[in-house]
Amino acid sequence: MNKTPSPFPYIREFAKEGIFSEYTLRLMLKQGKLPHIMCGNRCRINRALFMKQIDEESQKAVISNEE
Image (cartoon, rainbow, N blue to C red; front, side, top):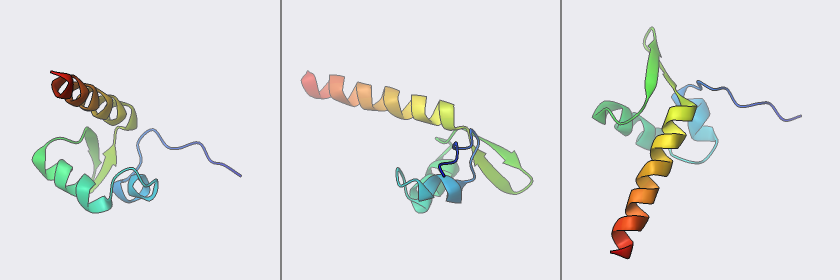
């Protein structure tokens, strides 16, 4: 049975999806590059904003490689 992914998963949950490792996500959090909200001392990733951010960065990379 497939579960609908949470729109605000914890870092560990998001890392299990295989897109980014837990280490990479925590590094991005410390660098201020990860859209998130804090619930106490736990971080929840804003999935929609993060995927949009990754998409925009990859488009910029493609454009710069074409030039």
